[in-house]
Amino acid sequence: MTTIYNFSAGPAVLPKEVLQQAAAEMLDWHGSGMSVMEMSHRGAEFMSIMDAAQKDLRDLLAVPANYQILFLQGGGLGENAIVPMNLMGKRPEATIDFIHTGSWSGKSIKEAQKYGKVHVAASAAASGFTTIPPRAEWNLTPDAAYVHICTNETIDGVEFQFAPEIAADTNGAPLVVDMSSHILSRQIDVSKYDVIFGGAQKNIGPAGLTIAIVREDLLGHSLPVCPSAFDWKIIADNGSMYNTPPTYAIYIAGLVFQWLKRQGGVAAMEQKNIAKAKLLYDYLDSTDFYENRVEKNSRSRMNVPFFLKDESLNTVFLAEAKANGLLQLKGHKSVGGMRASIYNAMPMEGVQALVSFMQEFARQHS
Ligand code: PMP
Image (cartoon, rainbow, N blue to C red):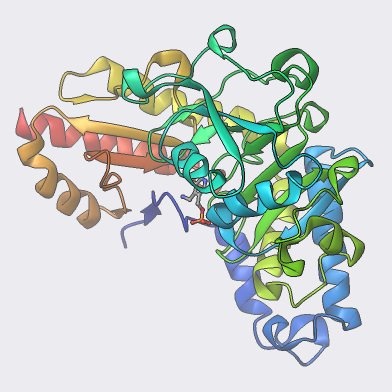
């Protein structure tokens, strides 16, 4: 049987071991007689799942004690509203600075305009979102409410390769980062950021869970309009149990965190991700049949958009890829072409299979 490799940008591939464990525990979790989906979120069984998931995530990212890990709902786009609603209460007149690096930071800009004054401090629009504007070109507002960046643009395939530092890089303004599509794929120093958020459905688990890591002194700054269920302070004070959390998604995320620990944690995963990305980009750079248009030092290790030079072959490429077990390679409609998302759960063998297929396809169609 053909081995299947799933290159979806999200919801995305999960570790097979995790899915097997979830299947084995589906009807009866640890002798409780219940599926995790059937448990009260306030019962001892689910509380133990929740506590372990939060602790394991804290370990994996070495989250300092003065940061809260919040398990929320609403997705990455929900956070685009939830972030300004939570940070603008003390100074509603302050300006929010954005670095516009692609589709997702673009959506964040639009949403934030409903809640405050917005300034685009740097934009990669002129390059067609194929670059990350260097820090020296950011035109930040003095005393901004906060600075928002998206460190991996899932659609455009660009990723920050430098870690902005709070004091030096944002003139003291809190730094808010959308890490939806590369959280846990590379080592980060959480203390250099003030708010980190992301939807789970790429590198963590199923859709429905949204993670926010918030420095504690930023809690309690919400606008009066902020719904209680999205108020970080209320969520934090209630251990992410103010209302019913997405219990099954949290359970699967917890299994992924345990799997990541067994793999050697984020540092080991980063090395694997570097090797996978190198294999694919090296091939793309070696051939005239395909191309990746992102500037080399802004390329994403997670999302690799590429184009066939002869776009009339796109349909047959996708059909043959699928027949070879290589799924969901179609690029986002706003960019076109192809996109291979190679998150943590994509093994090296999957990238090798993709590159072999691409070589063979190029040989047959040149
Ligand atoms: N930010 C980034 C970087 C994303 O990749 C996505 C989803 N593709 C979002 C935000 C939006 O997330 P959601 O669909 O969970 O609202």
